[in-house]
Image (cartoon, rainbow, N blue to C red; front, side):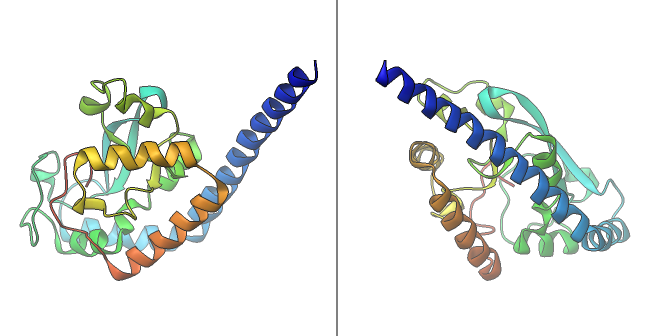
Amino acid sequence: MVAENIRSAQKRRSIWSVHLGRIVEVFCSFLLLVLLSPLFALIAIAVKAESKGPVFFTQKRGGKEGKHFLIYKFRTMYKANVDIHKVLVENDPRITKVGNILRKTSLDELPQLINILKGDMSFIGPRPTVTGQTDNYNEYQMQRLEVKPGVTGWAQISGRNLLTWDEKIDLDIEYIRKKSFRMDLYILMKTFIKVFKSDEVYIAPKPEEK
């Protein structure tokens, strides 16, 4: 009886933690969208001024439990090349000048605040990959889909494009097993440092990344 009461209390705390976390995410993403709206407008103008095409790049990705969703990014490539999934290289001619700046500063990822507000993503979690991969995960890789994908994550601060795809999978699963508020805060701080230093932006990106 005592054990059942303990499990019941733990379950209630877990549910409350999830709901509280979602409330915080909605509040923070909405607040950031409002505060950063002038920056969004400037980036949109710059993207449109340099090349023809949409302001946003959208693509289907695999989310929590394999559910598909549409991810948002600022377009960084010329319209004719925006859907080409080839490995990018340094000074890739398919990337616009504005796009190059957005990628180096990770500002192209800002529209994912919309994904967080919608509930598709979280601030911290495994990076969302293309559906062609998530739909064909094996049993081990499926563990990566137990949580919502994030704008940044454990793999991103642990090597990003210096890592192999298998190493990223291992790190993402390690994060899910060890997930805590303290760990999320550490990832967030390390992300800001890496963005400021523009670390590992163009080193052999994989199709699931930029």
